[in-house]
Image (cartoon, rainbow, N blue to C red):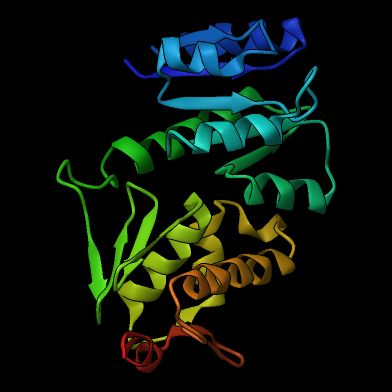
Length: 235
């Protein structure tokens, strides 16, 4: 039985979601202490978190960052905010999906099932830790780490997703649409700048490893890993 944790300060919405999701066989807990959300996270060890943005003390972005320091479990934001930048911020802070209020409960269930399949079901990684390697560059998707030579950089889930796509597609180009789809389920509603921002972050991670220009922009197509730069970085 998958465990779902709801972080929502409107008790009516939280209880409605709990009742509806529980009908489908999930174990659902509601956070009530919004100053110590991670205490509930540690105690309940949820497989998925539904997270509001507007919360007392600290907002949902903050709590998502705290979760990402310890876990790659799916986090779905649910918020009355409908601006594109709100969705971009959710993505940038480690969220996996975004649902706007008011919402239809079946949409919530579809999103939950989709994320659980990706994380633990038929599309999930095998129990043995995966390691992707190209010219000395090693990506550990489950650890959210990347190494090159003797250096290691920590990644957000989105950064790891992009680098994984680049490594899997090499020497082919990773298309913009493919990358957006990997970053965000419903990428039709994501600002085009979202991918650009994430690519910039990925390039900074490569710089932390001492590799310059590791991600090549292919105009009109997407991005490609520049292995020649990896070789140069190792010299």
